[in-house]
Image (cartoon, rainbow, N blue to C red; front, side, top):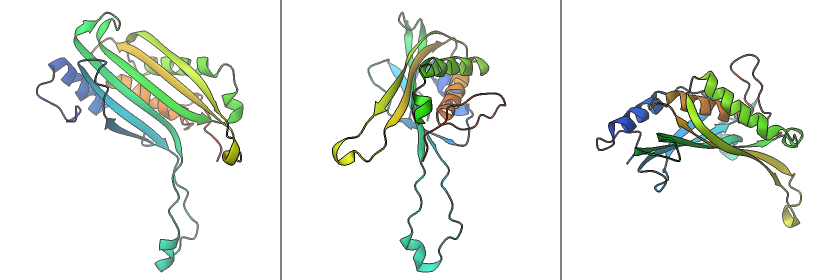
Amino acid sequence: MSALGGVPQLPAEFLDALSGLRKAGRRSEIRLAEIPAPARLAPFAVALGAEVFESSPTSPTPPHGPARLLVPAPEPEELATGRFILLYDPEGSEVWNGRFRIVTYIRAQLEPDMGNDALLGSVAWTWLVEALANHGARHHSTGGTATRILSESYGSLEDRADTIDIELRASWTPETADVRRHLEAWSEMVCTFAGLPPLSAGVAHLPHRRS
């Protein structure tokens, strides 16, 4: 049963948090959908999956008639993916230092010159902290890791270009059950990882991979 759909048996505090998630705003480029939540991390949990796709190119002279069936529609390029998990324990957790815990994951493929930057991990972490602050998402007990992943191909796949991905795994404890701002901040980070131009002037962003 969908947690975001609302279930009467759920604790009132957790229901309030789910209501906040439903009200969260986001950019049009990001797709959010509920996915199965982990069952062993907390008595109650909800998980959202995120995807950001590049706009599909349009053909200057689209074919007409039966010829349209012979021309496949261009597949949009996936720029970034992520997961946002809200955990809740009515009894509280000494590890979380609270009753709620947010666990997140973001992954995107970068341009080689950006992926080789030794400071990339610390910059990505700083942007997450700043996104939470800019959205007024009060929190504590923050932790996480930033990882660069180099993929090289061999044998029959040796013609494929090497790729570099950035992964950011982070978790924190929200100070209240109002988690709407936390989801909005995280959604902004997914779009940043995708290399989308920022909505606010003066904010840097990660360039996504070249086609």
